[in-house]
Image 1 (cartoon, helix red, strand yellow):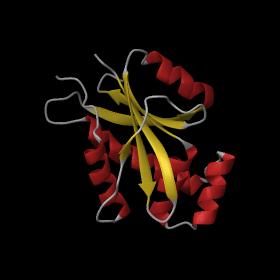
Image 2 (cartoon, helix red, strand yellow):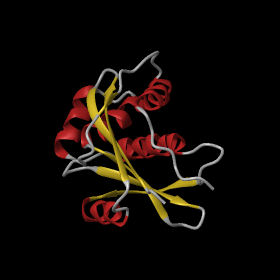
Image 3 (spheres, helix red, strand yellow):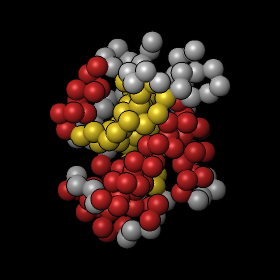
Length: 157
């Protein structure tokens, strides 16, 4: 099996535009510096080994999760500011992360699946086990909410 894909802005834009029900998103390339405060999703291969992470600032997590249920913008902004997602927004963000796993795979790549959401020390530990991996960052406008930052940490093996 081939290694995982490294997502490009265009593929991220296409996937998220479809998810948010808009015609177009202007996803921009971001830097490779992970935010100090974030929430992540771990992806494992068929043997259960951690092979990639999705890392999002709380703005992306709150806004993308809120957008799926049309939760008012003010509530999403409060969740982002407080770094505390409601149960519903957390579940929706989990689904966003699950859908984003497709950005890392094709017919020749390793098959992966979403394992769990992680925050705090658990996130730092998970990212640390992928040391030496590629970090690809994006700035993503979530329609009707605002901008967030999204990162993929992809194993080089």
